[in-house]
Amino acid sequence: MRSSRGVSSELFLWIFSAIAGALLFLFFIIWSMNHTSTSTTVENIEFARSFEQQLSALSTSNELSKTLTFPKDISLHIACGYFLTGRAREPTSLFVFSPESIIEQQYTLIGKPWYFPFYVDTFYYLIPKQSVVVAYYEPSAASYATSLDVPSTYPLNLLPFSAYSLTSLKRELQGYSSTTLVFFGNAPEISSLLQALRPLPVTVLTVDLQQSLLTYYPEDKTYPFFGEASLLGAFIGKDQYVCQHQRSLEKFRLLATLYQQKTALLQQKLGPGSSCQQYLSQGGSLLTTLSAPLDPERLRATVTSLTAVNEDLLRHDCPTIY
Amino acid sequence: MTARPSTKAQVQLSETFLVLFIVIILLFLGIFFYSKFFIQSLQTRANTLSEQDSTVFLSRVSSLAELRCSDKPCLDTSKFLPFQTLVQQRLTLYTPIFGNQKITVQELYPVPSSDAVCTKYLYLQTSYPGSCSQWILYEQKPSVVTSTQKTSTIVSLYYPEKDIYTLGRLTLEVYH
Image (cartoon, rainbow over all chains, first blue to last red; front, side, top):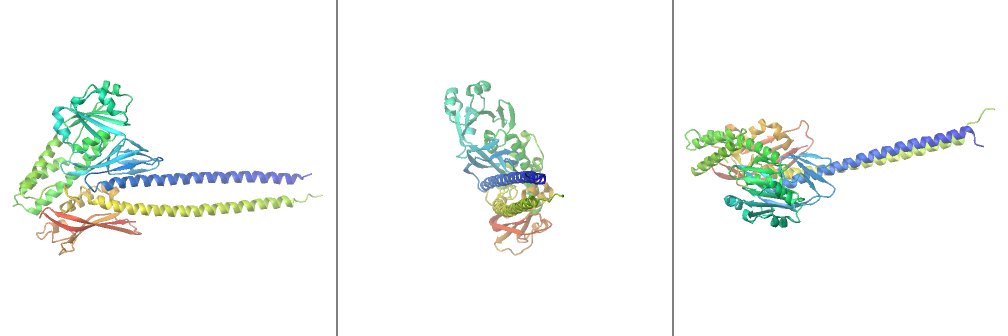
């Protein structure tokens, strides 16, 4: 017969082992979870930073494109001024136009410099391989649309409006995972067009070249655009357009301040007797105007005047503003 | 009669404690060494990333709209002094982009007659661009610097005042 003391000590042994084992088990589970989380975060940060590096490398040349294949296990969200992965949030000063979420497929990355009228920055377009932009132009917009300086890898299909028919459009859009329909000038009735193209994911926008405005449908929201690079960004980055447009204008104003200071220095350097003074003075005051927020109409007019002043400087063998 | 203590149970209990203690020590040693190697590998990855960053950043600086010529692959020297002013005015904007580093440009060819750092005073001299040959475009130094990583590239420098091009070196010193 076992003594009562022996039974209780054996029981204690079991209880102690169970508690100690459970605590150890819990510790290792928590440790391994933290370790996995740290590793994932590190991978995510590495991914976001290498993605930004790939974009930055493209900014050194004027127009380049490359194909990017995104890994299956990481999804990237391109927000305004940020690259977000599951566990990392990397700030970026780059202007990227793309679908909001980048997941597991091949993308074409294109860089195009934005001049307004001086070089402001490079705009990046990240376009899914299975997407297309079909643009129809009216006769009045033909010269603008056909002379667009579109990078060769940008999937733009330009057609005259006379070639528009719902049947041929449906046939053309088959096989694409996302589509943007652009109408330079008047568009057909949008709600029935969207209805007819359902369930295809289609973004429709119209471009008013007279006022340099673009309108997204079915939201019916209108925004200004400044130049081709901005327009090409609007075609593929509906979600980012408003924000990137604002950020790019902020950068533009910052550069206008810099050019204004450069002009003032050039004026001091050349001295009051220089024949270049009057053009530089004009340029300086235009740049002062441009360094503050302006309505689109006044902004365009001032930029046109600045271009003229810069050309005058060039014609008179003076140092140019930009 | 007094009950004798069960020595067998006591020995068993001590054995269990000992085994458990040794197992825990071994496990913790394992975790300690694993974590040490893991942190080391993280540091190596961070250094590699930082090296890649500075190389890419160097090419990015040379293509910054604030510094480059508008339509040619060169740096516009007449933007350097306004850029210094702009950075001082907009520190909150530029510090997160540039971080702790020093960005300098030095003229190399033709061999400059002066090694002076360009200021507004030297810029306005009639002898300019001969009056100076270096620009400190940006500098943000942390209070404690453990190491410095230096990368540089050759750039073309444009002087719009004289409409001439020279050869220079753009240097990036990253403070760690």
